Image 1 (cartoon, helix red, strand yellow):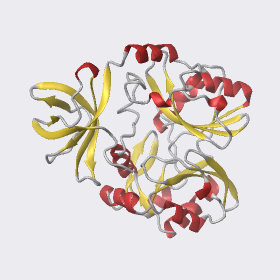
Image 2 (spheres, rainbow, N blue to C red):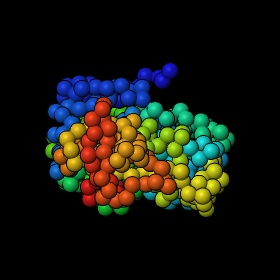
Image 3 (cartoon, rainbow, N blue to C red):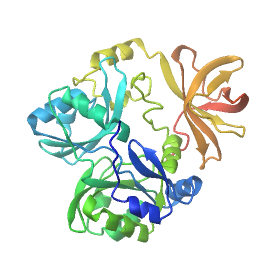
Image 4 (cartoon, helix red, strand yellow):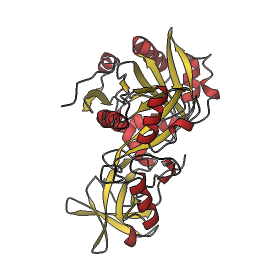
Length: 356
């Protein structure tokens, strides 16, 4: 059973009228004003998410670095201090245990950020390579400040942080009202912005000050629609223990020349070609595709939805789906998603669904 954990901002969310949901053992805000309004705030202005449920595993020392190197698909030991990298943690057969971010904090220190529900599995994967990472789940609140106005909003609160000078997937130290935190140019929305690792003791002040500066509070509901519009993978949907990174279109997140668990199996998939491939569907009828719905080309099933939702930006349903690599529907081909006995017509598209 997952240990119950709380974001230090829980009372603040309740005061804002958030609808809370259990996620990976945490009570987190699903929405405040509403998913569509919050989604549009991020696309058009600036939104702020509490994503403190993400894991925070600290790895230190030469032995820790060597173990991390073997546990993730990124070349963790070659990552420069001040940089971050998206990577995957694999099983021996190439299936995906989780997708993560790795931050190089110091010459012999890394911060590993898994999904909330997979923290233990990722820790076990590193432990299997000989190092026991430290779970710092309550050290930081993580605030994602995302949107076209995010730089301006962030600088109103932290004018001397130099955050706007950070390159994508870089991070810097930041003073968060007397406590040392981290600000990173990372995110999950397709918009410009930051992720602020605010020390728990000063996180409520940081959250309130960013709201006062113009950020709209946004819940996990809009986080899902935003990432889906960009075609970003979500664990439990595009990524599972039965899914490998090649078929998920994530070969770019694999350092093929390094050695990691699952590499040999993954190389076979790369050489032979994946059995399945990921594709996108943009609906042309009313209706919302959902995970598990079959996709038809005429009378033949050619795929199954792994993520589906309504796109507030496009005003229609969209879906990511897996299909047989040998019988993939072509771009612009007409298909139909079967939703509870009704068929929703749509077109095959290549994600992302919107260009940012």
